[in-house]
Length: 580
Image (cartoon, rainbow, N blue to C red; front, side, top):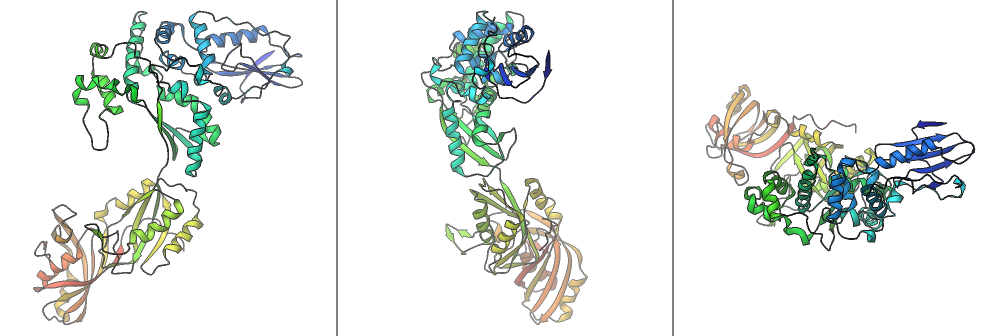
């Protein structure tokens, strides 16, 4: 008695190649049960046969025979399959244009698939059941889908496919997968899964468009439609074939979204000119850009193919496309890990240390910077290619940052090491704090989204300062006490002259929330300010030649300037505080 039952793949004692190359097989012999697995296009079934001897009943064989008939292509696509196959298209591309959505079909060995396709086109779909005399115990072990795919002998492909340019014929072999594996292994990344990306030459779009027009014409003769979206994309078919092979080599799963990406870049120089006629027909679709070496980007070609009429296309690119003598070449195998973001708060105690490297006309002005003192240790641990440093505002080279420090975030680009524990982060913080110039706290890994909190509403936040101010005229204590009573003072600041080379000219309204003065001597007093973030404190003191109004000098009717400035607090509650 046969009972349909869903089970994971089992080890088989014989592969029934005459039944179905998608691995309809006889499997899993035990003392009292025989397990038979039949995979076909729509689904995979495992049949449990409770029989005394190793044989297959006529009803189960009928099931397998029907599965075989459904394996490849629906009858309505037969004319398309004949057209493409006779025009130099490979069997796997024939499946794509016949809208076969079963990944198992594409994983068949190339020769087996070609044979099955020929049987389908010649209506030779009948298959005979195996002899009952065949003993299961004398058979070879069934192999995995990956192993079956690896049986493909690329030399069996008679010519380079005129649609995929050999990608589905020659570039999904065991040898190529080994190349990918060695590239990933030698790069030394830490990852738990991966996403596989493929960059295809844009001329493939032109060739596929040509095939689609012909296939569409064939379907119209049957009063049917074939939408372009119904055709299986080359990338998708390629991934169906190569995903399980790469996964087995790397020992991790291929997923649709991952922090680690393995990418392959293909090119085919012999057919580069396939796209060139589009420029004459759709000039506005191809515009030179600084970052692109060629105007024939994938996006531009798609745009042009959407715009060009069928008649114009066929005139410039007749069917069938030529079958080149060469296949696509692999110009690069790329590995890339998503950025890791590290955040914290820093204190700066030196008045000769810029926040970022200070270079003028190619000449370095200071030997180090806050950015470098922090990132040097991070780059070593995370083994990143580069970094991007950002912070909640910045202080001048001669300004200290005290209190709880200034929030900062560092994007570590393409890190090779990502499994970093809290203890490692504590050790990192300790190493950074070995200098007397800066100190960091709350060092932690954060998400990309969390970094946005640092910048959100930055100008609505407040900052507190302590400034040592000099006045030209002699002052007494009562001359500065009036500043204590000023609240919510509105000022207007034009872009300071000292930063005009890197910031656009503009007038920016700012608010001085509170001030508190502390008299020191006849020419000096200390001023504590709480201001809107983005206020230029030095310019508020001396006026910047009237570019900031009002200012301390104008309010005290004297010339004033700042001798020392400290940032006492940056009121941004981020990143979260950590225990010491």
